[in-house]
Length: 209
Image (cartoon, rainbow, N blue to C red; front, side, top):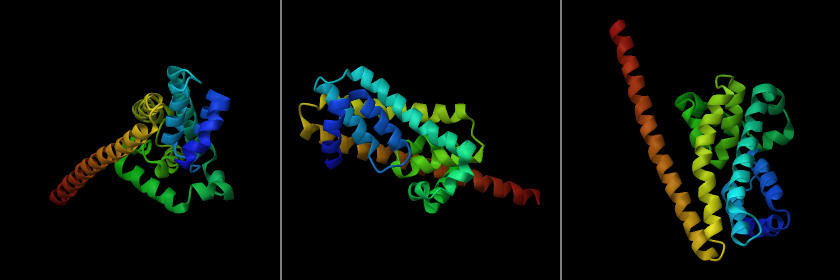
């Protein structure tokens, strides 16, 4: 709520540009919630300061370009960026190791899931680019599909909740819990599939021996 109150006058004054720039900043792991940024963009549209459909397009552009810059940095400047003191505060060794582990375990699908997890999104996309095992098209497909789910939810929720903030924040929290619940089920299902594949591989290796 404090972030919302801080962003609202800035977005009201500078409109689409402020939303776009803030989403770029979010892409680099700066602790400004992306969902609150998008909701605030929707709110100013609901208050008549912007067009909601244009705001949706700006939101998609800001999200994908911000994420794409992180992926590209990992691809071409990974080692150098990892040594930069400022970046290491955002992409800590612990987060980077967790991202590498998740990426190795779940493959490209972790990039889809990472879109909904602010603490993992930046290190996962950076690690994906740095690994050189993921093409730009594959990254764009996974992140783009996930963004087509998350961005319109937050922008249009802000738009319809612009005149009733209490209802809007109740819905924001409900959507957040729902998304985390679905992600938890998806990760559980993915873990089961991964475990069963590993078990079959081990059984196959034992029989071959």
